[in-house]
Image 1 (cartoon, rainbow, N blue to C red):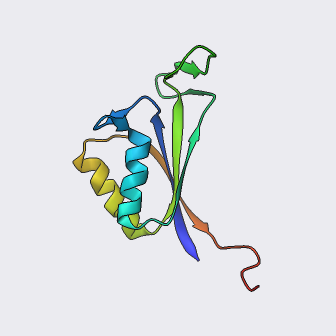
Image 2 (cartoon, helix red, strand yellow):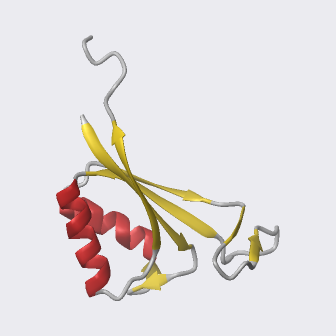
Length: 107
């Protein structure tokens, strides 16, 4: 089956309604009917401002990047982007067409 792979890049310290933004996005993705999502936390990153953020032992709430990864349909992408826009959420994203399925699907 063909789908879209959406990757949203955020900072782990970004909050919306007192919860981490990545967690809020996962909950909204569930409400839209997206079948699954994953959040990856970086150990180091930099963005358009060229400032390097790294994990340090004593930092409890760092400004590190997280990636929210979702495999979605075009309709789900539009619905999610409408939610982000209506909540004034700006995030860098990557969008790719992908083929997906399960190994050993015929067993």
